[in-house]
Amino acid sequence: MKCKMYLLALSAMALATGCSNDETTELNKGNAIDFSVTAGKLTRAEAITTNTIKEFKVWAFTDGKTYMDGTPVTKSDGKWTYTGTKFWPETDVDFFAISPMAPKKGTLNITNEQKELTDYEVENGSEDLLYAANFGETKRDAKNNTPVGINFRHALSQIVFKAKLTDNSTIDVDIAGITIDGVANKATLTWASATTGSNLTTTDNDTETGSTWGTWSKPEGTKSYFMNAVVDGNTQNVFLTLNSQMGVNESPIGEPLFLMPQTLNPWLTMKDNNAKVTGTARLLIKCKITDRESGAVLWPKQTTEGSGYADVAISLDNPKNDPNRESDSEDNDPKHDKWMQGKKYTYTLIFGEGGGYTPDPEGPDPDPVLVPIKFEVTVDEFQDGGEYDLNANNPANP
Image (tube, rainbow, N blue to C red; front, side, top):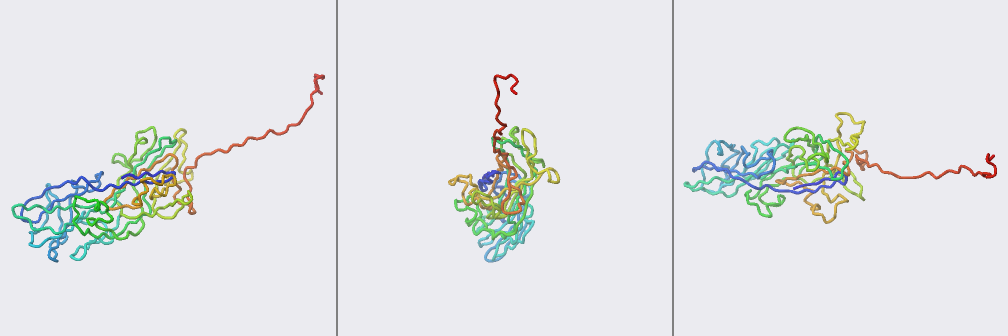
């Protein structure tokens, strides 16, 4: 899913893609309860996948009783193992799992009555949080003790950034990093009310309503998340110019962030074709902008202290707020105002006709950081220099 953010009109086209291409790892056989695990694939190595998941905790309940209570399960030599073998009871068993085993923030409350991760807080955007549920698992046959197939859901939204220039741009942009500013960071996760299977239906793909997805309570708090620009895995500025391959194609910026699903409260709202500060959610792009032909610095101002880079701000919102976007554009899907769990959002920052807004306006009307040179032409009228008679019969013309 892609989002395009034009830094003059500040439009964002969000495309969400769910997790797919699951893989299964088999476990040891036997009469004991065993597990096999799948996790939705995402495109970056930082996201947990079936191949990279290493651990989880599991709770089990049967006939109203706790049968497994936060049992750690780890992967060793391709097999999932745990301490204190549990055998299949005669009654059906419900399983609930989480990975990583110890989330950085929040309190796990997994009982027969409730299944919640309370007050979970996204600390720095580096933790990919997964959960799973299996309902009504029955006793396995001793000769064919198939493992419990646990399919994990991604509880957070994955946010990825790219950048490019317009084909007719006359500027170069040197990007040092990006801050996601003014987004909610804390909520409580309640487990899914149905098995989180890997075969998603159309309804299940809607992570807001599908019963095989957990639910987040109303997110709260306001937090900023900064990431350095990264090129080929190394911390390095991303330089955009039409003379480089990066400028022609969309260039990735930094590592993906895993953030709280939420309805965004955009920093700017378009009113009468003017941008007004009305909310909090925005991007701060730490950059330097220069004129390509002369090398003249267009941003930041000469009064800026520090490294020669400064933030430009753009609103993080639905492209319907862009007056240059056609009203019937598919980008006007109201879901683009939301980050949904298990979805990946790719935002493409497009520089060229503009460079965003000043991040700290004194009033509700931020100024664009790039102000185009315009001309208004006047021509002086000829001034009266006097009238003179010349006598053709007198060579001296006295």
